[in-house]
Image (cartoon, rainbow, N blue to C red; front, side):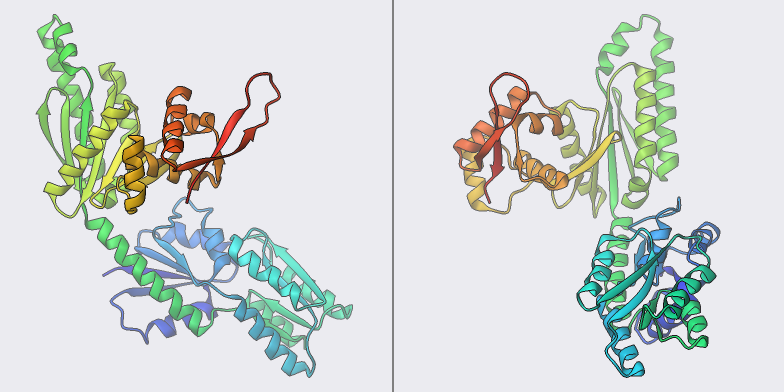
Length: 435
């Protein structure tokens, strides 16, 4: 079905592949071991066309992979090494030295995913002294070995925990108690289950049908304003050329519905991967036609439902009157894409009957309420003003104030304070969603 490249130190890669072979899977796993973690980028560069997904032996190579132009969260995963690996190492080494180790040195990448950094920080609760060697991707193995060996010779540590099997081997030869923090069996099994689910989700998305409706605004007025009959025909030919180029990028086909309206059919995966290119081509069409161009995209299991979803997305675009690309899924999930700002995803439906009833009183659509909720979640804030809402949702201050007034009257938001201002004037009220 799919090919998965496994990246990490050889010992880690061998261990992962060993457990993979014991599982019932139709995935093909290819081994790509490295000597030093910086080689991760070279591996991705040389072999990205040979595999469909990448599995990294831990957080460290995964973090390095983020520097590559081929990095994709959707296609990459890593073995989540839990704090249990550190505890196991401390216990095994304590047993081997005949006392409870209370002083340790470890080595880790200078920049880590937050969750992994928290697990390292937890070690300080069990140790009197913890020395950390933060290495860069190109830091030599010898430098890491010398760091630990120097601490040992100065009698500052009892044990060493390392991310490199080669460091473990070198320190063992010097008689230093050392443990390699590699993926444990349960970590590998748990990650592979999550990874399989991720691949199934990807396959589902990749094979979904996508319909893209493109509409040039005021196309009738363009035709009537062209006294030269040939000019409009040249414009239509140029327009079809741009649409055809979009089709070429997303491996799709189009139907010309007339009056500057086209519908393009393709698959979800390739459209999502080329969304930036589509956005750039729409800008070129706007320059060519000197008119706004609107796009609504629909994802679904069939052409019929994809087209219906695209029509709903287009309706949403026309209501907003903005240049954002609106994407609607079969499940009612809406994504607003604007190249110059983060995309926002929300649902057009509400699951709570109580909220639905209150929204009816407020004459606010569930779609707008869910959009506010999604934007606050994206910004990681609980409280907000009407001005904040207006800025983030690209609406007027007056419209934002009206929406908040109606939500307050319906019991869906509450006052939670006022905004301090350095300038004169009335302080702005701060709101908070209820529930």
